Length: 288
Image (cartoon, rainbow, N blue to C red):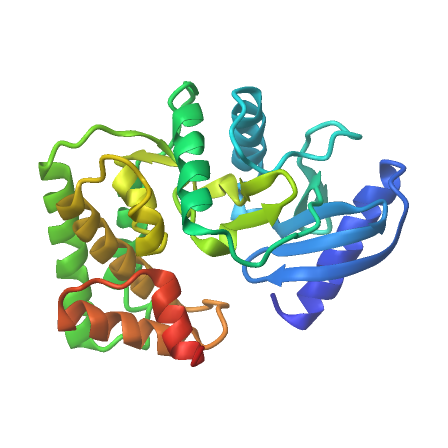
């Protein structure tokens, strides 16, 4: 968010907390992108704040409640207040349990086991949800519209649009079983807590093959996940690279250095296999 928006978002979150008798003297920014994650103290609550037009807060709260009921390893809503979406000054505010991190990196075997538990629980949830192809369509629309991606060169636009369409056809053509998924279970959406790995950011939940979720995690995690279709996983990894490339070229993208990431994803798609995961690309570009 822009600095002025961050200030307003923090004020909105603290106002909501105060109205619910959750004492708040300070707000620490934990994550800032299209949404803001704040730790409110001394009530020790995690507040997630987004522009009201973002529109996903209610979906995320509903799925958080459903997944908690079936014992999925996900972050929980704040139990001291009603699980509602609050609106203040053009922002939506939702309140969650804050988990003190105990490890920065989840071991691959533990990560895979937690993801397997998440998928098993999700198979018990019967609720309307988007399909992974809806997200592909969103990426295709960004690529197809020069007003939404004005800095994307014509040749790159044609290449990326074609790759998105061909990968969608290839994945659907495999006819793999589909189920409810997290949608983006990459390391940034996994907390290492005293309760074990917990998945957060549930606004991306969608239906699709489990390999779509696995495409967001490290190869070492996939090696511990049972019965993976390796060819389908390769197609899904390409698809994830192509979708993220599209979003990095969208006007108003707020990821720091996003255009450089967008260019690197295009280069990788042209270079061919082996297909890297998102965390590998991020480490390479960050020089770590």
